[in-house]
Structure formats: C-alpha cells, structure tokens
Image (cartoon, rainbow, N blue to C red; front, side):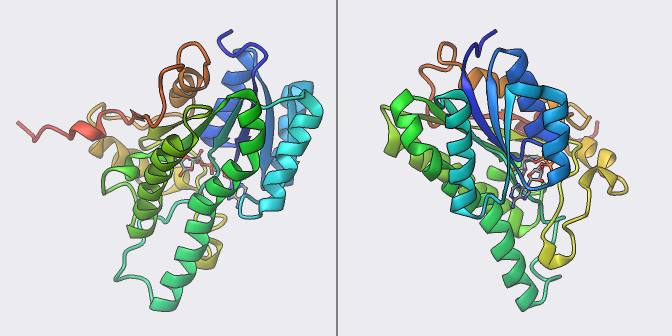
Length: 264
Ligand code: NAD
C-alpha cells in the first residue's frame, strides 16, 4: 500500500497504460479521478472500480474539461496529491515526405494539441490543488522523447517536447511540486492516430507485424504490456520512495536506450 489515501488524476485512464496505472494505483490504496474521451470507457471504469474512481468525460485539449476533472476529484475526494498526464495519440510512423503540406499541418495541430497542449492544460488545471498538497505531476513520455524509430517526425517531436515540459515544470514548480516522467518503450495498446488523417479509430496493437517490429528494435526482444510500466508510476507518485526525485524521466523501454547488439 505505497499510495494509501493518495488522490490522483489520470488522463486517458480508460485504456492501455493509463488503465494499468489506475488499476495498480487503486491496489496500492489510491483513489482516482479520471478524464476519458469516450463514454464507453467511463462506464467500464465505474463498473470495474466503483466508488474508488470519479470519472469525467472530456477532451484534454479543452482547459474547461481539465478544470472539470480537477473540480470533480476535489469534490469527491477532498484533495489532490498527483496529476498524471497520459492521454496521447501516435502518428503511425508518418513521414515528412509522405504527407501533403496541408495534411502535415492538420496532423501536427491535432497531435501536438493532444500530446503537448493536453499535458500543459492538465498541469495548469491541477496546479492550485497540487500547491496546496505539495504533490507531484507525472507525464507519460516515450522512447520517442529521446530516440528515433518509434514514431514519425510529428510523434517524435511531440514526445521530445514532453521531455522539455517535464524539465521546465520541475524547475519552475520546485520546491513545492515534484514533476517526473515515465518513458515507455513499444507497448501493445490500442493507441490511435489523428482524426485529421482518418486514423482516430486505428489500433496500434492490430497493425500487422507490430509485435515483431517492436521486438526487433528492443534488446529484451518483446513488446511491453501496459502493466509493465505501472510500478514505475507508483515509485514516482510515492511521497516516500519518490521524495527526492524531480525532473527525472525513467526509461521503461526493454533496453532501446542502450541499443541492440549487431548480429554475431
Ligand atoms: P491508449 O490509446 O490505450 O491510451 C491513450 C488514451 O488517451 C485513450 O484512452 C484515448 O481515449 C485517450 N485520448 C486520446 N485523445 C484524447 C483526448 N483528446 N482527450 C482525452 N483523452 C484522449 O494508448 P497508450 O499506449 O496506453 O497511450 C498512453 C500514453 O502512452 C500516450 O501518451 C502514448 O503516447 C504513450 N506511449 C505509448 C507507447 C506505446 O507503445 N503504446 C509507448 C510510449 C509512450
């Protein structure tokens, strides 16, 4: 019970890594406010976790929706200890050359609005409550925050921006609020793409050959499951175990960061 009585918000907590974090945090004693885009996720979360969650349906791109999840969480649980920015989309390896200029512009807008502005607006909405509690923020980063090959130019640029955001906020908000990240490697989830590219119903885990693509670029030679990253979020959220960490991003990447050995 490393998060006993901790109150946490998770964006995009209805599937994938966010859902694994919600599940693990509850088993560690936390209660969770969750912002989801899809009604079906809201029903599933309430059925599964009952009064341990407070679910708000909204879009991370709207400040008002971020304010609503904070207000609902405070009204239900009385305080906020940790904000986890996690909702995101992928670019399905879209190349600069392969996108017409107008499409590139539209895809950029949507992907950066969700992956970067969504984190900023969530942090902004959670800030007053986190100042009160001297809490923390955690953002889901990626191997694409450091390296190429896990996305196209838009996704890699957006996740590099997330790394900058984590560092800038850690600097700005110290000593009251710790700000850290988890840089996940290739993980089998339903990660979708931009609606502007007609990829909002795409599902990364159904991409032909995705298991092999991830295994081939990963020294541990297998794709992660969402649950594989959840304990790292616990470490960073824990007021005891994470007390001296801010501005840190922990790679949970199967070794992508050290690179693969060449074939013998
Ligand atoms: P996922 O699709 O299961 O989770 C993303 C969630 O964000 C979904 O529940 C989706 O509904 C929600 N979402 C998308 N747009 C939204 C919006 N505008 N407003 C509110 N919610 C919105 O996929 P995932 O892989 O669990 O993704 C979670 C995070 O992990 C993302 O930030 C992603 O970039 C990151 N990540 C994923 C991988 C991977 O290989 N799957 C690797 C590194 C980092």
